[in-house]
Image 1 (cartoon, rainbow, N blue to C red):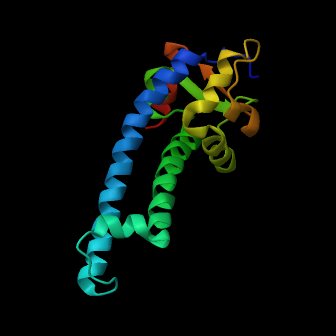
Image 2 (image 1 turned 60 degrees about the horizontal axis):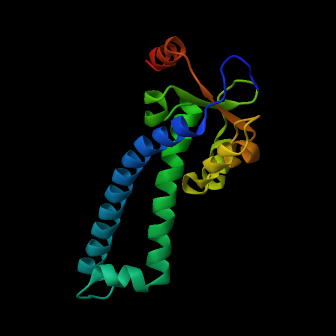
Length: 164
């Protein structure tokens, strides 16, 4: 543990996750709309056989469904990974003055961000914080060798200013 800032508790993590999921849901919806439009274009061009219900086609085709699922997962990983590796803070984390970092206090790497996203289990991994009183670490923190700390107002502002 870096020791400079205390590790974040469950409620702040949860509140930040709600903020971030609102953004991720909107990005996922945009991705799904664009994917559906591409499928429609392929139907018009004759690449995909005409159908009365393109949405059903996507649901019934393992390939098309798999591509859509992979795109939605990629949007989530890219959203969190980008912010975590750039400043250690997502939009929600900035609002709640939280930061993800290595145990040495550095920004996490892309491999750590990917591992953290996958092992978070859509936020369920944070429940471990409720029983890990001593370390206040979530499942994804243990697996990715990271920690989430609660920042002071001054440090939060400093990080935000450095992004310019």
